[in-house]
Image (cartoon, rainbow, N blue to C red; front, side, top):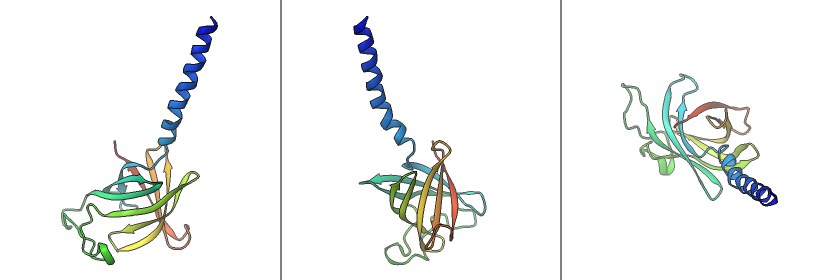
Length: 151
């Protein structure tokens, strides 16, 4: 009987070692997200967020332009290396690092106006939503969008 008890305890311990990293991964912004415009409520694009050496980076994978808009838009208002480059494939999130329950210290580029804002992310609703806050100076001087996780 003692052998069965010992095996059960060992299995429970091993299971906890396997499950713990998985539960941590659930609270990560890594993955594919649908960007919902905070003004119109319509989807704007698909952004893929990856983690490289502890830094979270987001690239535009797809856009949803209106029929009367450019179907393969370029960042005409951007400056520097992004000037007149296609929006699809462009890195718009960078420099974010995990800070408690948030991801802070990063930047976000708005391809519509070419402006780079400070940025922070918060994973919400059991990792189904991502609150993306872009701001100048301090977080309360900005705006937020809710992005939805793509399956």
